[in-house]
Length: 196
Image: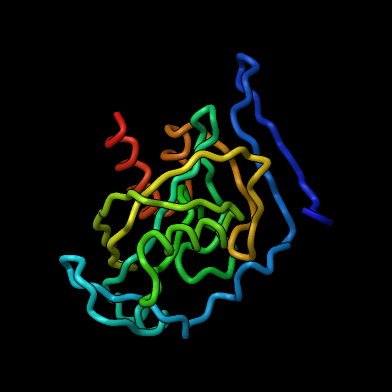
């Protein structure tokens, strides 16, 4: 990426093996417009049937059930790409996402939503043909998640305005990461249990 500044930090375990790589970029991306409370969001029923749409702000205020995409990104060594959320995010500001993703729009397919969010957040371009659905609810939101995964080289990742840093961690360390967002922790746990 032209003009990009990369800062890399490799933490080594006592055996000398790399344990985590952190890549920090300035806000370089024009891939995504700033998140808007007016962005349309696809609403669904408790049984994941489409029910129309509303603006993001209303969905958040009323805790309306919606769809979101979750893409777990790993490298060839099996480490999980975890992303530090920007401090101005509405949910979990400054937290760690264990999957790339976000709300689905009413005018896009699940495959399009997965691809769009992965590209907006990490600069990766992938096409998706399979995913698994999961339900997640807590006091902050209620969501049907479309969960998929992909493999990428750490050097291929670039950041957006929503992501301020990336670490590559073994899955067990990612799951134990303080500040991990609960929905992405749930998504990663499901993915790991379905692949074992």
